[in-house]
Amino acid sequence: MLYLARKIDNFLENWHSNVDRMPLIVKGARQIGKTASILKFAKKHYENVIYINFLEEPKYKLINENGKVESVENMGKKRLAYEIKKFKEGTYMLFNFEAKPDSITELERVYRITDDVIKFIVVRK
Image 1 (cartoon, one colour):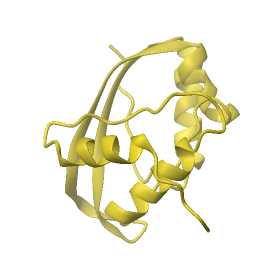
Image 2 (cartoon, helix red, strand yellow):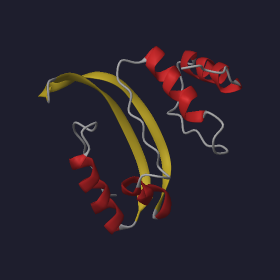
Image 3 (tube, helix red, strand yellow):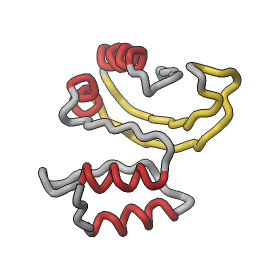
Image 4 (cartoon, helix red, strand yellow):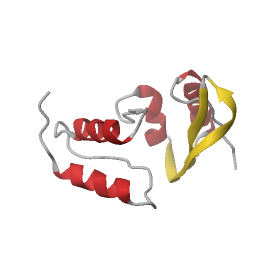
């Protein structure tokens, strides 16, 4: 398939080379190639890629509609204490967010049925 180079390509490469980078949320106008650019970049730099469209997938809408994400921290790839679903290591992510209790219950349910999430814990403050 033909791929047209975009300004975001350089931005993604610069983001990737930054050792203090934060997880990336891409927003913008529809139908301009955001998804194609992100997927091309991800396949070039990572073994596994998880694509989540928080606005279109109903099971993830609760993050935007019923709460507020305060911070996201990529804690890096670490060896798991024990093998889970044939995985020996995983990327640890820490999300601090504010949400209604029923949203948190739904989020936990979604995590349980999402194959890409191998382990999770939700801690209430």
